[in-house]
Image 1 (cartoon, rainbow, N blue to C red):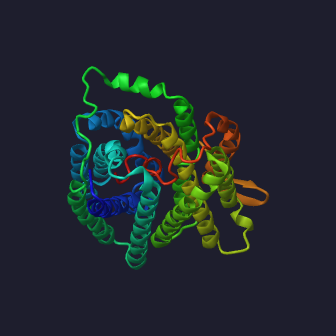
Image 2: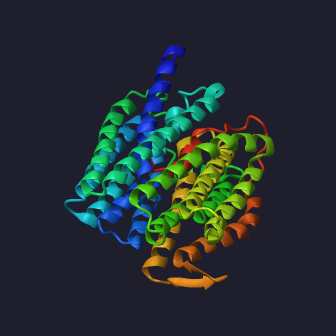
Image 3: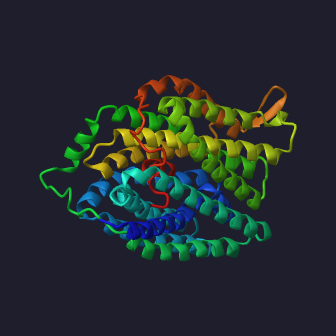
Length: 439
């Protein structure tokens, strides 16, 4: 066990490690990769498909990786994953001068394997390090720290791309992230693994035995089913917003990245407020509010033609609101998750929820990508004397499904008992990161 002095030192290492990791994740969230892929000549439909690729591939990886992490060492598997993340960033830098689209796809696949190795055992690695009595405060501080790091990096990206749109500017920023990723390998290696790596190494219990034990947890399957549906109808909205900014509004790369910063800022605000909402009114109320406000933020984007303020301000407000609601939904998911997961196979049970989350993100991204590529939707249509695009059709579809899904709130057990789960626990980080985002 750790004494108080050692624990504070390890806490600082964990926070530094996660801040550097989430900067890698920010490349997906703040519009950097959207701009970079556009600079490489990738079409909008291919961009939507590429951004969904890590989630699609991780669906097949997280569960077996979590099973192995519990048996062969969480930190050992995570360090292998970090080495792969470093390789993926190097490959992404090379894509500009050699390989193009194929190199980008290969880099994202390597990133997925590395990130899945880390995400599979992250919760279980930290569980014995952080005592229950300080868990909420610590993970709250951790989340604020890595969100602020992501915002700071996004502002740097905005400043650089505002001055130069050249390929070398993108490669230079990727180089900064690559250096941070190398440093992260060494900080990750200093996180102690307090539980025996073979603590659950019972060869009489197979992968399917572990899976059956998780399925028997009361209320767990309805919860992960609800998370899947909620993700399916919301995960592609930020990407759709970004494609509209690029293709319809003709925003500059720096302005698109600024919109990404507003999305991240909204997430910080949502996490801060979400704890108060769920503590007072329960998780089911948190999910209900999230669904209604998700639909409201999307509708606001559809009503942009009647806004009395400039278009960038309106789009920025919608993006900020959507990020804020996402943070609130993440907190509600945390409370539900930590109240439901069993004592044994913790990594495995969390990986199941993350796998379904990633499946929802992947299917949503695939839907957007194919709808654009196959020209299944009208490129232009008119309603109330104003013109809309195929992206508006996609957003309208998400709104309708979110409103229909209000009936699915009954799937989620009503866990309102105080103390049954931390509002800032590790599970929400997994849901927000999608399992493969930054470890």
